[in-house]
Length: 263
Image (cartoon, rainbow, N blue to C red; front, side, top):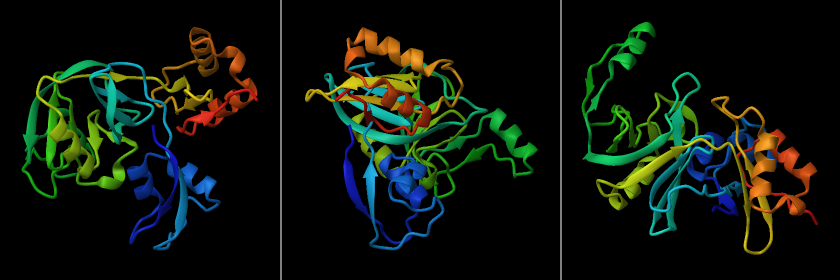
């Protein structure tokens, strides 16, 4: 999914906000457009964007979230319906993996602050809050999907630039427009699965072979090259891959699907 396209910079946008909406790391956007990571963008400036990602082969109905990709995929009847960049648990507060069910839907939710986060607030010298009512200060945003994994949910945000990053206390955070779209599509009881796959391989119908390598943010993949070679053997693609190019993709770990077929 995704594509290569030209993006016109809007008023007040920077690389971080564009990355959050498009699902391409700001470092990669900067590099591919020959600008500095902290460059000030001009309204009307044209940027080349490449947000191609490999869709994980997991559930064929419901929600699939791949942690290293920072992407959420929604399927209906075996077809990909929509996909969104997300923000997930930081290095010190992991998003859990496993299957789940959507057990509740809340519009304009109240955030009941877990004791662990209250403790963190106190340690950081912040005002400790037990509940945050609906409104612009609520970090859940306007919509929340409660999950069968106790204490975790998929929700919106009052900080859109935080999307496509690892910044949460484990929950899955979407851009306000994206959570509204997903909220309308999802029914209570919908299945889902959170997976952890930094490295993925796929062959397109036109013969092209792609590898996507994401940062192993939770340090769970000791040998990315061996993981890729195993996947290539399973898919009978080993002889079609330029392994030098594939190793370069693994080394750079840019989080974008790159062509690695042998010419």
